[in-house]
Image 1 (cartoon, rainbow, N blue to C red):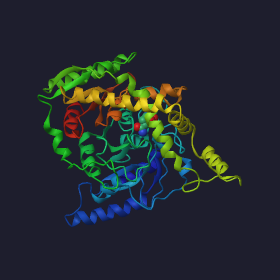
Image 2 (cartoon, protein in one colour):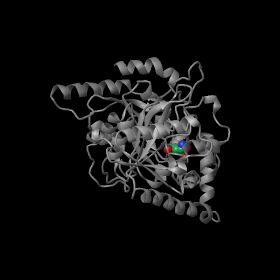
Image 3 (cartoon, helix red, strand yellow):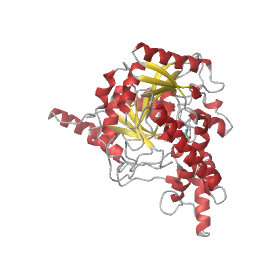
Image 4 (cartoon, rainbow, N blue to C red):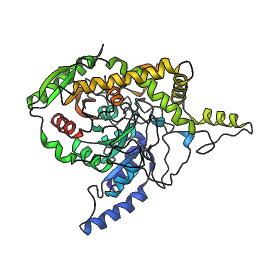
Length: 452
Ligand code: GLN
């Protein structure tokens, strides 16, 4: 009830929820109480969570923050959310995001922007919470939920976690099932937890993860005890510092934060090793080809026939598609569909899409080579702290630069997390990123726990 009240009081300003479900929450809290009274109940019994509105939830409207999906009420539950329900979690509602998870500032939602609960010192400017899991990040940071699900295709868990001073984990691709999660770029999309600290993330991840035969890319490997891994420490751990992440024009405060992280890990017994990830500079351009190609294909299903809103002017079938998509998709989504279909079109496929796929392999090899000498890699999460809503870059490519540090791990499929590590000159949170080996979330969590 305290969380339901907090949402009532504070979410008018933050806009972190698209759909609130207080009645359902009260019902499942009652069931949780009954289970606890009998000495039963899973590891999340009674824990109030928010769900990014990209996960299908049975009987609860699911929008992907897009008008085109309309008032879709899924008849089934995503695997990740059903795992959380199995362990007793209580859902408070569906959280806002960039439309179809495309964005880095939560400014593209059809349900309006999300506001970061943090303010700059001495300023009333509204800050962005990052994106695309900005509703999840804002709700956790403001104390409206104890944890939230996020999804990360190129940074959408890590960057908003950094912008709001919380922890977020993007697990290895294949660790959490994608079944029932609305697709953006299927070879990159990965669900993960967002919470106030890594211990809460570890407990949530243990519940969310696991093999699922309904997702052909889900990997059948046992889910370890992530919470226990937290206290392993970093003695003797080799931490790589990739020289290519010293990006041109990176603010001095981000460099200083990075150095602080290095010092903390060294003081805790880690060995710091300089490494090279030579194809880093191709991360962003290849991501914005590969991801958008997949998005254009995934979003082709929204044609006004089988799903969501239909705009029908009584013309031909093609005209129905055209009118529906023109009205239903926002500008950023349209931009991405156009780029995606362009790079896949005959004559351009070899030059763009195929080339991007090859470079993606090189990026992945960079990581595999590095992991012969180091156990984890430390970098900043984002090149800046949260910016103001009205400082939004007008050039979309400028906005894409926010993902410069998060995209390479996504392209490689390796796990990565962000932990709060300091404040910028305005007193707004900054995060550090740790990138790990395939399915070695445990070492990642142990190293992150030393920093947080
Ligand atoms: N900001 C990136 C993009 O716009 C990442 C989004 C995501 O991870 N879903 O594509």
